[in-house]
Image 1 (cartoon, rainbow, N blue to C red):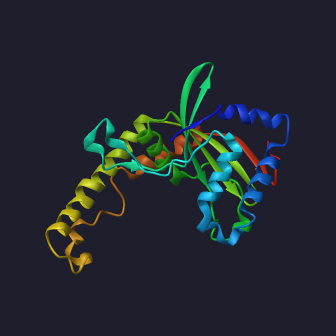
Image 2: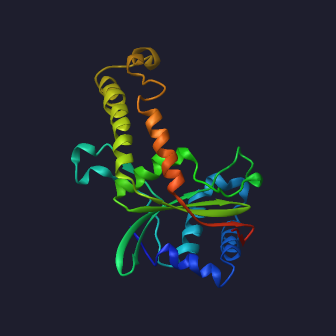
Image 3: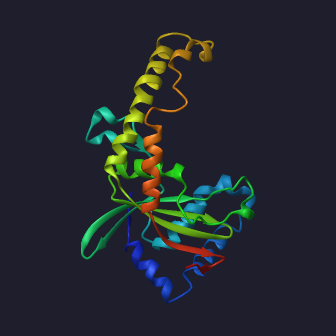
Length: 235
């Protein structure tokens, strides 16, 4: 399922003609008022639907099922992803394809203290690049919602980064998960912590430092498209 709509630049530009932040917050608060913030985790999909509706109007949809990576390369069918949505738009008459990811951070469980991000946290970069690669999308809009405001980031796909990340994922799957699965299928395991201990991965992969470094570069290259506090757009 795909969201067919205008580009993010279109509705972002609309903020200059009306208080976009206030409109968005009002829409969201009305959508979740019957739930209450204390039940947030049990109704996360309703929140995401409200956010997507605010962004893309009636022409939207949520991708709820896993998208398998191995359609072109069957040997990679162990990789899959489940994004919140996908966007088809046009820039200067040319098609461009993006993916939508929505984050609603808890900030230690106390949502009243949550503030919209100014930068994308480092640990979300692998997920973002994985989603773009698996769904074959050029960019990602990462939207962050809190009770005090929200922010929107644009991230670009980086194939070289994915190649590094895929190496670590492949090692984890083929050297640890798959061998353990085969053992469990062929014999009865009563004490997995002992019987499968030889397949336990190291705390950090040998490419860990490289991935962290490259992730920092991608964070620096991401763009903050919009940030609002209590409905007021920030500079």
